[in-house]
Image 1 (cartoon, rainbow, N blue to C red):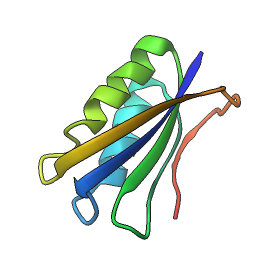
Image 2 (tube, one colour):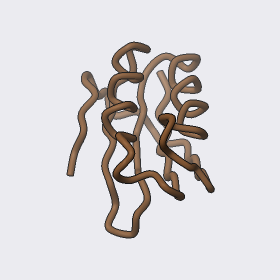
Image 3 (cartoon, one colour):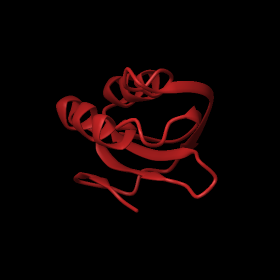
Length: 89
C-alpha cells in the first residue's frame, strides 16, 4: 500500500473536480479524500495499491473535462490505513 498527497492548481474548482475524483477513486478501489482549498486549489490524498494510486495521480494531471490543470504537486506520505474515499470541505 502507498499514499500520495496531490495539490492541483488552475481552473479546478466549480468544474466537478471533487465528485469526478471520488468516482474515479471508487472505480479504482482507492481510499482517501479530496477537498477544495480556500486559495482555489484542490487537495487529495490517495491510499491503496501502488498501480491504482498512480492511476489516480495521473488522472489529477488533467481532471474532468471542464478543468484546466496548470500545476500538480505530488508528495509521498506514510499510509494511514484509510478504508473509504470521501469528499470533504
